[in-house]
Length: 136
Length: 154
Image (cartoon, rainbow over all chains, first blue to last red; front, side, top):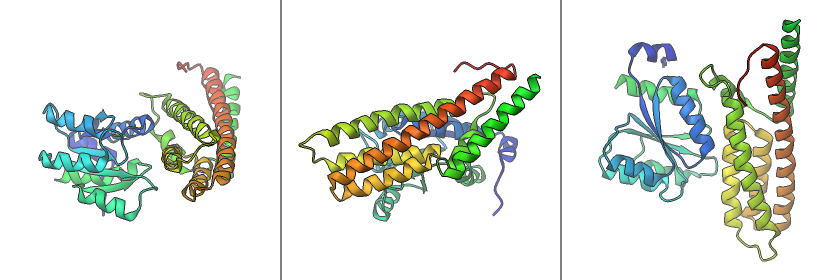
């Protein structure tokens, strides 16, 4: 399967808008940089509850939501379920760690994810999903 | 003369990085971070590594406090801290730190306090080695930038 390069994404002039939901400041920094490197823009939420509030306020819509699984206040599974109940149509990609077993990953997917990726995230892991969004 | 200084320093940086990869201290994820650094964020790697150090030291302090408590029994909390350390170490390419955290986590899953204490010592040792190596790397980078006539606030 051919994948678009950064150049191709720039040529289409469509900026992907991403919400990054993660309580880890290290991951937020890295994931923001990856999205910027791919040519997108991003907003961050430090936990699931913040992500729900952002959507409840109705100010922003996102092409993609990167959802960490383990977070205080409201975790990734609960947040994904809530966002789908709120009829959020964005592509939601779960971000799991090596500590998560198969059952936990399945439960996360069943909460309403479109895809699941394992940390650490890289440009190579995210680009195919961005391509999907661009082609949609 | 300026060029020779820059070249020598770059060679030192390359030698240090090669050694760290060869020892398994760093892995491919560190290269991913370097590739994300650009003119718009020239200190990206430095900034990210410093966040890692800050967060890791909080976790290591917490782990030591938990295990030093004679009444300690909260292995679940140890596990949670270690999951964070494993995750963050993976994110920056700190392979050896990550691996010893995984071993430590196995001891905590068995509620093995002596094993946990040994695990903590090993993690602390690997973490401090990584930190010293990163400081050496950043010093060389700073010297190289100075030699090349470039100055970034660090």
